[in-house]
Length: 224
Image 1 (cartoon, rainbow, N blue to C red):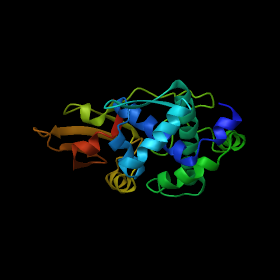
Image 2: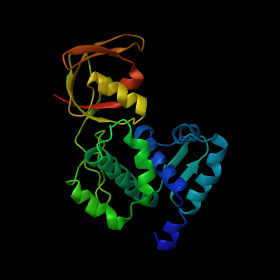
Image 3: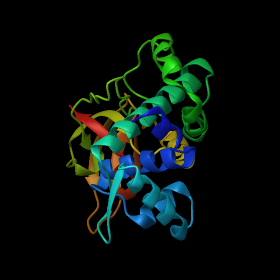
Image 4: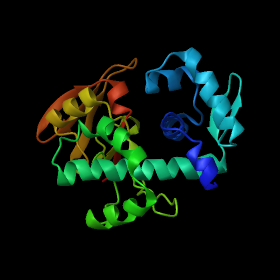
């Protein structure tokens, strides 16, 4: 991407690319309603920005199938994700903000971190491999190194492991998980899975808790 092209990509467009990347990782593509929900905008306002991104060959959009990043768009999205997750590390490791509060603040910071600053920041932070929520920080070359892990919801009763990452970074959810001790690095075990999409009973820090399947579906573990 040329300097002229980079300057034509607004902060709003960067937010879209980041959101599309996250949804692609989860669902394979990003639907309009999903983007509207994640970005907290009206569905009708999505179209113009998507067209702008298509014009710059950053995304492809097929009606009823959703939006996907092009290779060019993915490279830019990974740069944004890298800045975002390093900003989260700065906020938690240096400024000591709670992990449940840093996502939104990092969204503001990421657009103002130039490439000149990002590498020294990474070095000053000790070259962290993940954000505070356990999600991998892309390398300077856009490589994502991540240990094999599985969704907590996919484990059977009696199985367990160590939590590797939380892929949903909403404030209330992170606060709730922290009160249960369900944070990266913590051990967790499935005790029971209720039928008909009922709750999952997990054990962590010596106590048992009932988790909704929507919550268990954002927790990833390395099986023990």
